[in-house]
Amino acid sequence: MYLNTIQPAEGATHIKRRIGRGIGSGLGKTGGRGHKGQKSRSGGFHKVGFEGGQMPLQRRLPKRGFKSLSSANNVEVRLSELALVAVNEIDLLVLKQLGLVGANVLNVKVIASGSIEKAIILKGIKATKGARAAIEVAGGKIEE
Image (tube, rainbow, N blue to C red):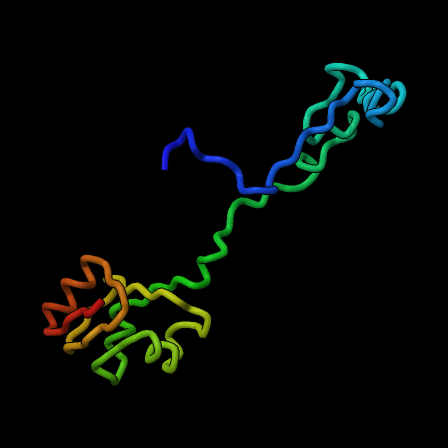
């Protein structure tokens, strides 16, 4: 494939209407613009969001910041919370059953907060560098 051979799919494009080419075209004389007014004139248009001097919508509404829609799916779990778990092999399903994470959670990451003494095996769970080191010192391992 070459860039100069790329074409739209068959039927995806159509011939543009020729505006202002006489009565027979259906778009002659005013060219579909109607009579008079700002929109009928050449170069006569306003900026996007302009409401005729009225305070525009984007300025009337309060600024609310940004909230990621995927943040509810990603959760952090502390080492100290994992130390309280009775099971040695820990995966996402175990954490959901114990109530450490919510039912809708898709990704879990272990953070190095607190300490852990027992050897645990993490399956399908990510860990920070500090948490990984602490788990390996305790004799555990992480399987991703």
